[in-house]
Image 1 (cartoon, one colour):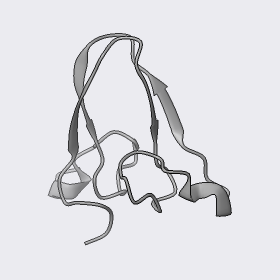
Image 2 (image 1 turned 90 degrees about the vertical axis):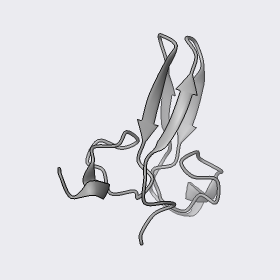
Image 3 (image 1 turned 30 degrees about the vertical axis):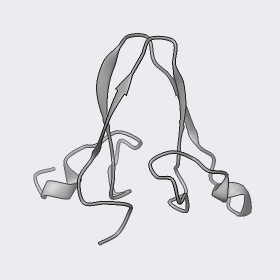
Image 4 (image 1 turned 120 degrees about the vertical axis):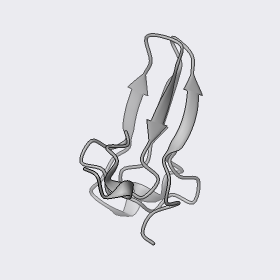
Length: 77
C-alpha cells in the first residue's frame, strides 16, 4: 500500500475553515501537513472552504486531483 490508508478520508468542514493538506507524502498526520515538506520542493495545498460540507481527501496519495479523492483507490478512475 502506498499512502496513509486505502480509502479516502471523510472530513466535515465548516464555512470559513482553512486546512493545509500534505502534498509531499511525508506527513505523519495525513492528509494534513505537519511540516515534513521543508526538505522538499513541495508545499501544502491550503484550502479555505466556503460552505459546510463533507469532503473526501485522498488517502493513498495517488489522486490526480489531490488533495481530493478521484477514486484511484478503487481502480475505477
